[in-house]
Amino acid sequence: MLPYKITEATKSTVPIVVSVPHCGTSFPEELIDQYKAHLIQKPEDTDWFVDRLYDFAPALGITMITAVYSRWVIDLNRDRDSKPLYSDGRIITALCPTTNFLGEPLYRDERTWVSEAEVSRRYTQYYEPYHDKIQSLLDERKKQFGKVLLWDSHSIRQIVQTIQPSKFPDLILGDADEKSASTDLIQIAHQSLASGNYSINHNHPFKGGTITRMFGKPEKHQHALQLEMTKVNYMDDDEINYNQVRADKMRQLLSQTFQKLIDNFKGEPKPS
Image (cartoon, rainbow, N blue to C red):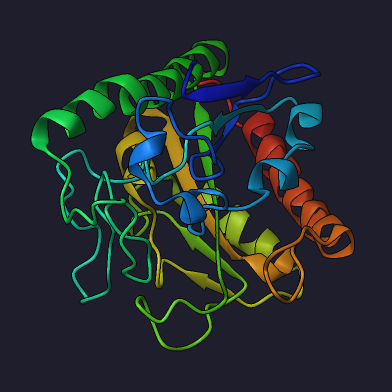
């Protein structure tokens, strides 16, 4: 089984691709028995329902790529060598994590590391295909339009004390300290998101993971932005169930933001 699902645009394509790397909940047959059964029944660190939240995007001409497997198998938004994304002391799980965000062991044998050979195997089988497909989609859009934007979509609990003790803002727009996208795209996205009566931060406490940093090459007309949001913006107060009313409000804001980005692309000449 492919480690990703592609949802094609249902109208004329636009130069935007949406990625949802942490919505996967499946475990490969060769690995599933190694994990604690009660944990993988509902893998806690999942970005629950984010693929559903964004399922309006294809009607705008946007192609979506979404993960199939849980981030506990391999984290598609981590550095190949598990190099920390931040250096402020927060807990950051590895490429192939052995604990969840709260430090609870994931495996039945309570291993504290995954062998280098096994990490390499998972990298080849699950990580590379997802990243290669992203680049393929970006290349297709760039060939058609001369430019492209990757929007990497994430969610998180309101409070994760291993990262910070206080609540996260509703929305966090990340662009690797303004290195992964052009200034105009960053401003359009930020201004639009800020108009929605949500609290919003820029590059703090998240500035974009490996996907944003790796694929964001504005000097080559290939841009990337990450949006992190707290789950209560589209789920219930317990962050368990999808809340249609909250989700519809957020979907309206996201749709508005995408439309403004699309309009900006249309107003620019195609790069030579």
